[in-house]
Image (tube, rainbow, N blue to C red):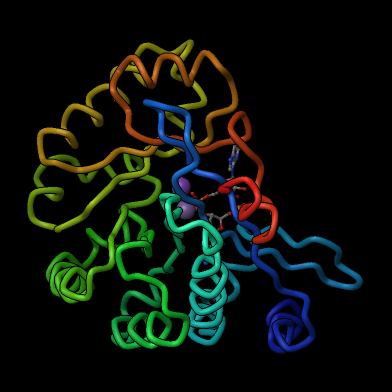
Length: 253
Ligand code: G
Ligand code: G
Ligand code: MN
Ligand code: NA
């Protein structure tokens, strides 16, 4: 309860901020996008882990206030990236959407509003939904995803592989990309099962025309193996830590 009270008003007090982690294309090593990650710097508690406070925000319903603000701030930052140079390929912005935001019904409207206000091209916005949230209510999720697609927004499944949704769900739920969960990437160099799973996800996704992102790449060996297996994009500490919007813009230009 204490944390919930602290979190209420944290945005107004300026304690919440966004950092942006680079996403790199494996074929040429170029930065092609970034994932927005929320940070909470509390005056006494210090840096509170997102895994802790996102959960509190989700349980308490506060996420329905914080979520749209995150979306707006991330779109506003991305709209400025590459602005100085028309010839540059402009990076996409990937924003995490929690299960509760997915269920709440006004997501398409919030998204449309943010795009209108910031002028960000819809195709540059990627929404990251967790695999488990999507498969737990497939009918609702499919309809919602179709609405978002009609608006030109891309949808990615986050933490892919952990929910065992597999091929059948990917066929029924229209997604543009999957992000292979970092637990698989962490062990792929020593655990043949994790390597086999990663390879299978890449092949399966590609057969459906879906882009594959590897998360949590921390070593060069992982990157080499992912490139060899045809993975499209990657992110992780080896490729770049989360940075400010300004720093990301400098990396992109
Ligand atoms: O750095 P990292 O510790 O930021 O993130 C931990 C978890 O918190 C991840 O599962 C990530 O998806 C989630 N997360 C980070 N930022 C946001 C956000 O803005 N909204 C939601 N819903 N989840 C986020
Ligand atoms: O579930 P979500 O993918 O949105 O999680 C993103 C989380 O992963 C963030 O907490 C981010 O800080 C963290 N992260 C990003 N790159 C790495 C990495 O290379 N290794 C580890 N362990 N965590 C990472
Ligand atoms: Mn994510
Ligand atoms: Na993830």
